[in-house]
Length: 113
Length: 111
Image 1 (cartoon, helix red, strand yellow):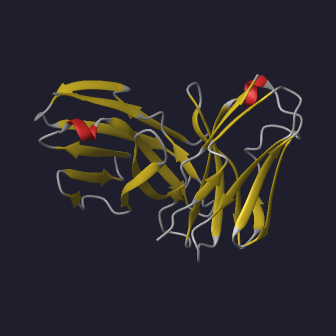
Image 2: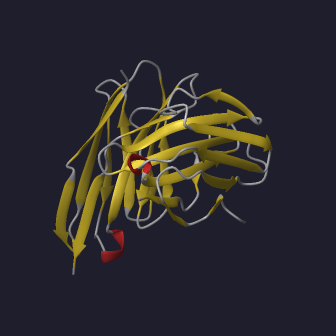
């Protein structure tokens, strides 16, 4: 079975540019989560969706960050404009329903110069 | 504030040793505790624990939860170099669906 698929795997761009990260959850999973992982702060939840609807975006650091889920098989996380402190690994995870474990994608390693 | 604390942060042992990783938590409304293993890429799911005192086992790995003392341990017996990874503990908050992660324990198994 295909797991959670994220793209791109790596992104290097200059500050001020727009960055779009993509995620395809596991088919049949109703919840999707975006996380950021840094050495200093570990894994932090940014936002999650249930049935394509954003439920909790309290972890989104600033207005520069936005996330969408236009359908059950696709989500994007956008940063505009990007800053060097946004450099991190961004993970997407999905799960079938409450009470089940979340399954993670391989992440996007983002470097903002 | 919901908090998950893991110890030790780093551990180096020899192949064949047994290790115990610790996870304690303080959360408003506990639903479950999960262990993940993270090598170079995605955290991969190991165990989900919801009830106290019931050991979950998978090969050389096992885990148990104590909801009275608010902690869990992950045991690995007869360690192998392939067990080298960061082990993450996370707690799911009831009603909120989100996971709160600990800092992780970086385990290194030397041959």
